[in-house]
Length: 496
Image (cartoon, rainbow, N blue to C red; front, side, top):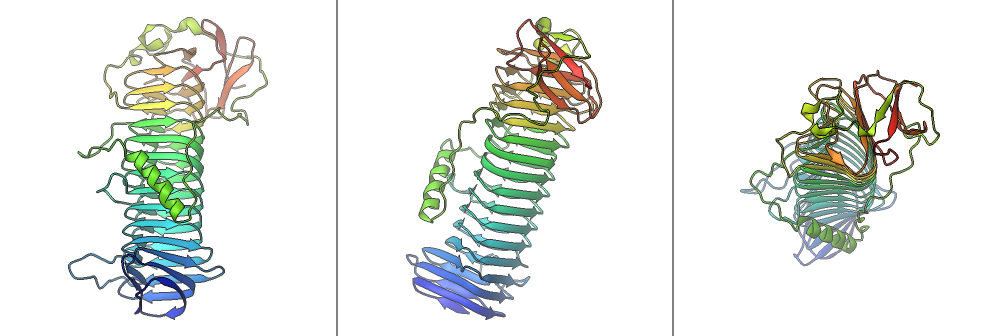
């Protein structure tokens, strides 16, 4: 056992076949440990154990490879379940530098801090029986290259005793995460503001017990349950999301899509607003502001990049690949859909399903609001599903809904309004719903087609307003666009 007792910088290299590097300094001391080609194995405890310091910095020396490993059984401290990670710190832990760190945990977690875990650079290959990266108070990552394999969560923060802690903030880096539970899990707040993330998770890819924010980055997701689950509020401001498989896509009590590009393939609902389950805990109204302030301040103090501030959405991106052609195409088949066909019963035309237009049950707290961005959904269940209301004010929303009669491309329990944006939905007719009202014209038609056929809506002059390629058989079409005119005529063209 090699023990560091005083403040300073210590350069560590060489091999320790069965032993431990310990930091046990005063609680006011700052200790920097430079790993410069170190290989440490401890058969019955952490390879590196930060028992006490004010802050501990682990620096990965440029051009070096460092390895930390442990055994499957620990000799725990009396009356405690600690320590429980290959690299275990009781105090704030910052890992920086440009070298490589490989950590294999045979006992429980790989890298864990009971306070803040901050990572600003380096290359990491982590294989853990339980969690790969874990910071009880928070996990903040500014940059780095991460390959994380975890039997539990890939990245986790779990402080449930402080409303301003228990958060995860990622501003950059490249991540390949394979998790037996959640890809990234936060107790209070999960923010992705940058980076490239490839996540395969048995449960949720991204999960927050309270709030979630996507403000940037590029995400490729395959999830056994939800792609991004936030219990109370989920905000999509920017970023690119490609969900190739999940049970449900975005899920929260309130969902706001303000920007970004989203593609979701879901085995059930693609976007779902359902009542939050807080298990009796009251959410602090100041939680998000306090967490954001703390995340920015601590990251700046540690040398990490400050957290990106989400924007206000913006104009939807230009369409390509036939999603929203600019060149006009004259209608070659199909009849016109009159804008004044909207009747009572939720604005449904006479040939649609009026009984679905004005539900009487629902939760006023549940809301899906589409204000911008480019959102493409393919669902076996409901495409857009709110246990309360839906509001569309901008952006582009394209939905390939279900083929089953018990689900619909569009499902809500209270109201659905449209005041902007471009919407095109196709799906089954059994539970089909229209918008209830809005300041922008919309039209509904029962018209069928098959997988692979184009579905286009043209204005009175034959110019294509919006189109998509059907992913499966459908029997209804719902459209809204600022190009359409109230009382005017538009044409629905299926198959060419």
